[in-house]
Image (tube, rainbow, N blue to C red; front, side):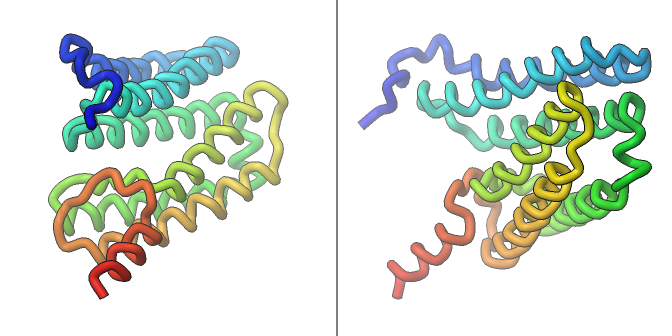
Length: 199
């Protein structure tokens, strides 16, 4: 049975187009942070986050989920996260002064995970598991709250813990999957179910 939107091939370009727009937001975010325009930065940031929700939903709705789309989404997510970290550095330096080590540990762990993906598959893994997504969502929740309400340290720590759990799952999947297998929402649980069926 085809997805609801499978009969709309003229819209197949839309999810990747939205992901590309998110990438194009990055230079604007970098400029706004450098110019000290916190309100404008927060506005563009929230719009970019909305595009992240929209592209995946549309891809599934239209039945156009693809490896290329998954890879583009991963690149857009990484660039957006880096732009936000830059924005926090310039617009809210108190975060780095008080608890910068949390950010450094998480960023270092993810850099290691992405390097391991490139070594293993020759490209970003693009697993998009629920645990990884929850860690990313927790970080963005912290960042949005930071720009609206001010610094909430407990949100940063929560995001750090969830993100590191996502890194652990990432490495488990790298070890268990010899071939590039993007978009595994179930993550480790997917592997358990698969092995249980085979046994």
